[in-house]
Length: 252
Image 1 (cartoon, rainbow, N blue to C red):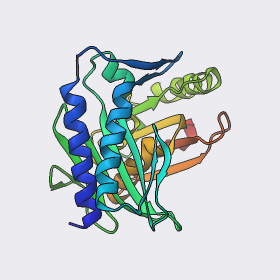
Image 2: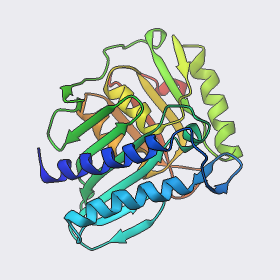
Image 3: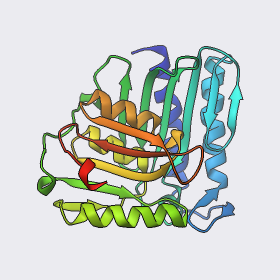
Image 4: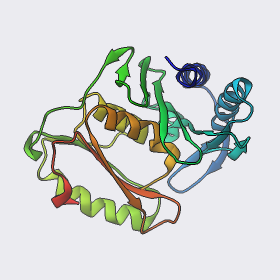
């Protein structure tokens, strides 16, 4: 195990412990948006992760959902989502996670990815060139190749334009697949594809910190990722992730 992966696991599990301890408690809301919630706990979780990472390597840079760009100008950049699935967490729905990835700051080459679901005590890890694992055991994407066999999750984003596009896409997909699911965490959707639980995930408008670790897991597990700049909100992306066998493109 590399030093980077050891640090990522430490940060993710410590942050996961923090948010699990606060699950179901009274929460301080920093911002209540139309389709999103920002919690004080998001900020605390981000700070805990930042302190661990920079405590090991002060020269590393960190791109986080809650703090923006901080840290030094070293070769490694960390990409952090301290609670992916904050709305689920706020409403005491036990489906959320901590997502941490590291990449080369200059080349953007992925180095490590970790996703931790503290409620299920599930830890996904992957290193550059390595085998993806769940709680230390190797995982791989499913072999389901036909839409009629597939379980697909479709994410619905936070603007009217993104929602409208998502509704139309959902209708095209839902008629063709075995089941659809709307789960509320992009990182866990990708981890589930890497584990063979889901076969595809599509969302109109997503941020890098939501998917950085999950993309690395899916690709290492034999899946495929397609992203492009969102036509709706600058700075975000459209994503389509599959098990690598399912042809979902005609329905997008």
